[in-house]
Each structure stands twice: as structure tokens, then as C-alpha cells.
Length: 318
Image (cartoon, rainbow, N blue to C red; front, side, top):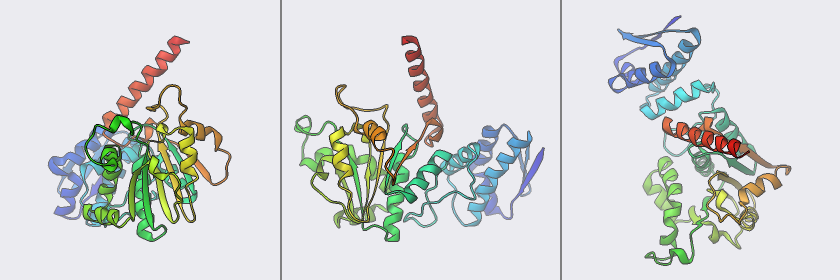
């Protein structure tokens, strides 16, 4: 089977090809097809299904170029992964964030379920491995809700497992001591909003990034609240966090139950809540897997290798 993608002008050709034809090379490698380009036409040859998927990738890049967007290589890799996982790019639920023309989108079926859950539930639990988009998509949804005026502020929370006396030797006040644990949340925010705006909103209290211990005794109204790395919460801390939710607020709890840093004698509040709260109407649970990983391709292979090793070890113990 052979299909052709026609390009209208030089700018569109450059966008679809990418620097040094990187986009064509990525598509060729991903789907095992032959890709040739001549006089504004890209010909794709190979098995029917592979050609169809490759064409979907190039057509998506082309449509973004037509809108005047600069398509980055990382976006091309995301598009390829979405096509490989049979995500309908025409129906994907784009999350509008502050930066014009750069919506955040779910790239896998699991991520689509996650975004849909956040659209419809007041409390959402997202459990899955590193790189599966748990925190990033939740932050994007929070920024979108703030942008649309659905909430008045964003509260991003993380447990600092080592906080307390163990951090006492570090310089600065308590905020300075716990900032290293909160850095990933700032990274996600800065990916979606200009640095100056993040700083402005933080100074005005519209965005708050804080350790979990700072939530005790509070009621969070008109807020989008995210508890990240929740596998490191105790049962008491999880109960405390969930009962902070006030009027017109939404909470998203994310974590990886296989990566807890709690002492062996402590039960993870995330694992406990996952079993205890599943039957409550209005709370949604979304389980993501290695197939939902959208970081560098090696991350998924690394996760798969560790999971296989763990399974083999358990089988041997049995």
C-alpha cells in the first residue's frame, strides 16, 4: 500500500519534515514504513495498517503547521505514541492552559480516562508509574480551571517525608527547607505558565505550593487542590487532606503505590484510600500503567524491566 501526503508551501514542508527530516525519520522508524519526499509530496509505502498510522501522524503535524504552530520533536513523539495506542486525535480532550496555541492533551487511552474523570468528579485518585502524566495532567487541569474562573486558586501539596528534625541542619526557614520536595510541582507550573505569572500568582496567594503538614486545620474553598506523591501519606494524613475540601473545590490525588518512602511499619494512605473509598459516589479512581508513560521512550522500557524483574522474583519466591 502507498499513500501520499501533499504539502502546500515551503513553510509547511519544513514543519512536516522537521530539522534534518527528523519527523520523517521518527515516523519511518516507529511504523516500519518507507518514506520518501519529492516536490511537496511525501509518499509512504508499506503494510496497510502501518501506512495508515504513519499518514495519521504526518497529517496531524501538517494540521498543526497550518494553524501556525511550531511542532517540536517532543510533540511529534507524543503524536506517534498516541497513534500507536489508537487515540483518536480528532476527539482528544485538549486542556486549554495559559500559553496561547499550546493546549495540553492526553496521549493515551488511560490519560483520556483520567482527564474525563477530572472533568466530572470532585475527587479523583490517579495511581500509576512515573512518567504516566499523573501530576502534569492534574496541574494542567488546575491551570485551565483557574483560567476559566471555575476556581479562584490552585493549591499544590506534597508530603515531605523527611521533614522535621532531619531537615534541621539545612539553611533557611521551613519553606526553604521543604522547597526541594516541591520543585516538581513548580516545574509543571512553569511548563504551562510564564515564570513571571507563576511568581505573581504565588505572591498574591492565587497559587500555593506547600508541604502536606501545612494543610492541617484549613478549609479550602473555591480551590483546585492536588496532592502529589500521595503514596508517602499515612492513613491519618490522607484523611486530614481529604477533609480539607470546602465549597466549590476539587481535589486530585496522585501517586505510585510501588514507590512509597514510608517506614515498613506504616501503611500508605493512598493504598488504604484506594480500597476504602471506591464505593463512594463522586470519587473516581483511575489506574494508569506503563503503557501510559509519555516521557522519553526509555522510561517506559525501564519501568517494564523493573516490573518484569519484580514479577520474576515473586514467582521464584512462590
